[in-house]
Amino acid sequence: MDDPLLHPGWPARLSAGPVELHPLRRRDAAEWSRLRVANEGWLRPWEPTAAAPWATRHSPAAYRAMRRTIARRARAGTSLPFALRVDGRLAGQVTVDNIVRGALRTGSLGYWVDRAVAGRGVASLAVALVCDHAFGPVGLHRLQADIRPENGPSRRLVERLGFQREGLLRRYLDIDGGWRDHLAYALLAEDLPDGVLDRWREMSPGRHGDRST
Ligand SMILES: CC(C)(COP(=O)(O)OP(=O)(O)OC[C@H]1O[C@@H](n2cnc3c(N)ncnc32)[C@H](O)[C@@H]1OP(=O)(O)O)[C@@H](O)C(=O)NCCC(=O)NCCS
Image (cartoon, rainbow, N blue to C red; front, side, top):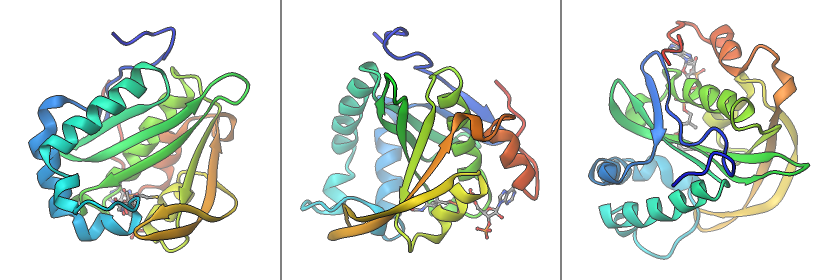
């Protein structure tokens, strides 16, 4: 059972416009596997280094094992693992991980979307919804996003949402076969008093971000 005292704001469903976020589900294994295998070239440059072949690491069985681990972390209050749907189809993930409470109240943001839905504002809309949820019901004060300098789309996404660049983390993560520098971006709860979704709407050419729940 999820314990609301251990993890306020979890489990949760969030939605706005064509975007819906919900906890990762066991029955999404086959759809997730198909999506991750089809997106190998798109995702690999930003993924942790691993010895096993991509197809093995993204099989339905691998999904089920990953989901079990991450569901345990969610129950323990250290992760918010959301599946992202666009117009009802699985299209990516948004996760706040490594949540620390106490005086720090921080979490690390991670996300990916299917290449087929990129460039339309749905990834930033999803991240905006998760940020507002993390600063609201979950009660965090800081969200950090660590991004490789060469990841233009990801840097544009967080910059548009108001994240500030705080520094360079040298050879910080073992990604795609080597230790890679990362830029540390962060957003604080008080940075955007009207919320991150409001900021997304200001920055978006076509505003389809009406919150529906
Ligand atoms: C990083 C990633 C999620 C960014 O996705 P994205 O689709 O580029 O991000 P957005 O949803 O914010 O879309 C941005 C584009 O949509 C446009 N857009 C924004 N709001 C819009 C709206 N309401 N209607 C239509 N278009 C809109 C923007 O103008 C922007 O275009 P531009 O980049 O040409 O300026 C994606 O590139 C990805 O999954 N990459 C692989 C994994 C990865 O890098 N993960 C992050 C590791 S740190």
